[in-house]
Image (cartoon, rainbow, N blue to C red; front, side, top):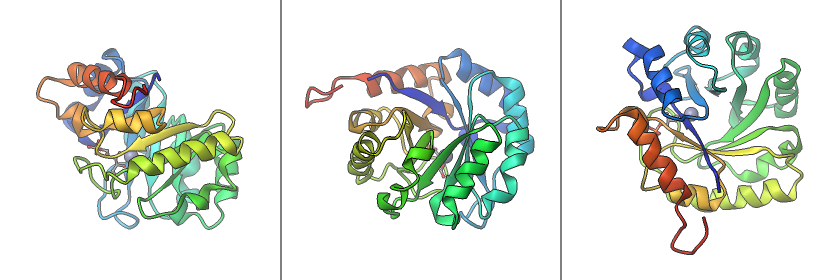
Length: 228
Ligand code: DX5
Ligand code: ZN
């Protein structure tokens, strides 16, 4: 199964961000993942619309914005104006999730919804027909370089079944956190169509291009169970 790779700039060298984004694009990255954190929803502060605009200016690839912030509704238009192609919000901070998804769509942006590791997939059931992306957090959000939570693989498998059965209209299944050559295969075989990788790409000793090549190869390898 062909899997898209969406390198997360959270682990990039911010002193030469445009260069790193271009290098990832030239190396065959499919999207660029932008991790926005506000220090409230998660215990870290990263970047906002201004850096998203800089990423937009540096590449033609889809800009995949992941909002790990409280009250995301207040910032949807700012990230739309900054050039996001996808805006993904956390179910945990959207009391009116259906309305938030509608607002993202009204801005001409593809809406995504994501869940922390301990949040049940059942909370997505009603909104699945409205989204273009469902994101499984395979780490507790807030930092790059963490280890993949093994229970995520079964959650990915269940979400793939839900998307197939609930009329998801071709929504992507993205997995985010701890993706590397050791975990990409399991996530892909379980049903992921997009893999986010931060440290495994931007901190790889052999460089960005080799890192992307290895992750893609691992993701597309036929598994021990014969599934690819
Ligand atoms: C964590 C972020 C992830 C993270 C992925 O809160 O949402 O996108 O940056 O980074 P790695 O691949 O290093 O776990
Ligand atoms: Zn992310």
